[in-house]
Image 1: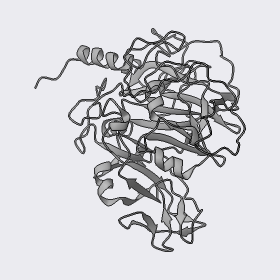
Image 2 (image 1 turned 90 degrees about the horizontal axis):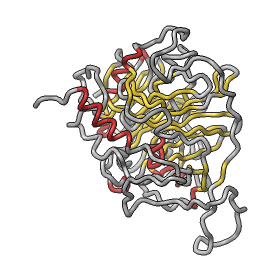
Image 3 (image 1 turned 180 degrees about the vertical axis):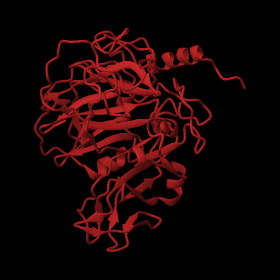
Image 4 (image 1 turned 135 degrees about the vertical axis):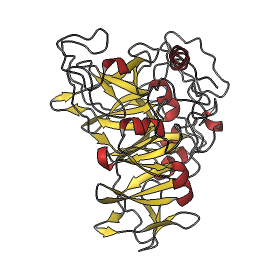
Length: 422
């Protein structure tokens, strides 16, 4: 079968990505809204009421609240990498500028969430148990960012305590990463550039308008060329798993200020293995199909990709990453964000976690007993979040390891020296 030409792929990709671009709530979008999509009220307030002694049947959902945020640095005058032709006074780019191509929307056409609002776990009514949420824990506080929201916005600029960070999700690479937004004395704020690199979301910082491919976490064009962001551990897990582990935690609200069909997938069928990646002109190594799901660990010469198909059979794998053991866990019920039009009705693909297999210096050996993860040394039961829920070690937590769930074509494009476990 003849492969579609570059122009056809550009047109198709633009159509898909433009579905994520729409006006804020003050100018409702014209896209169709499925009956199952939840629409938020434009008149919700900013302050949550104090907790009270009402029963579940008596209480009403609290209004979304804006949590304290670290102030961002001011915009710095100077040359921008957002538009072509590039100014001559920028540092030499780290990648050929022509390889960053337009995905269709203009800069901020897919709007980042800069003023996130949150509700408590107990007030969430729109998420099904197996839907994906991005789970982040910092300074002892856990927050959940539903993928049904991120799929329309791709970036959330947020803070916990004195740590400003960006939650990012690229639907085309199915990759979720979190970054510390501090860079030296700067506190950066990120938006979507409208460009793609190896099909990956290219972010830009609003302070200097430098360009940052998400899977690289490094500025490749612009005044900050060569600068790298620190990664923060993040997991894509079932809503039910987050809810059970973190009662009372904050969850990103669908009251975003934008009119979107949260719960509807604008990339229907995109994770079909028979379909080629959008806007990807590279060569995919033959080790795995282009859209095989992988767990990516390490970097450069230590990079390792674990086939999710292999992990789903073993449930527990121990991998040497740069001379250190990492245990990788798998649970089967998490649904895909890129399959059915309704996220709640999508196929199951499974969730993962990667951790150092030790507690207080004692090495642990993990196994799946047919019902749960247990360690052989104490018989304690562990969750996909790396927390001991029962047994002698109940309450203990494993140290998370940086990793990413993504497609093989994307991982291999950014990590060409990767080894493969399949």
